[in-house]
Image (cartoon, rainbow, N blue to C red):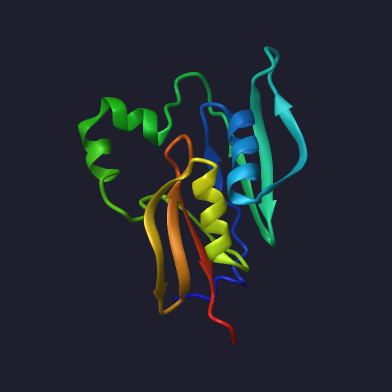
Length: 144
């Protein structure tokens, strides 16, 4: 597995409500918002950026027809079946310093824990879904 501490990709994730998503990601997953939010003429937040450690994630609103994974699963049998597995289907892997404390914080803020804390060869990890159903995996690499 790749060294998760040296990757330099910037994920871009769509949300139905970017402003609420950014606020929740900061509370539940310990992100900090970076820069200013972009808004369209009616005030809808269309872009925000959050970061934790060296990880940056861009959040965007593609328009009124977009449906989040959770919303999609409510109306689509295929999406509901995809969501029945405890794996990250499409999501983001983020390294953190204390994955146990991170998981406790996420759970307390209402994250759906889809894979409990476990020790794997690349490190200690867990997976969670955010309030719109996007899946995240957080990992604490083994001490070197």
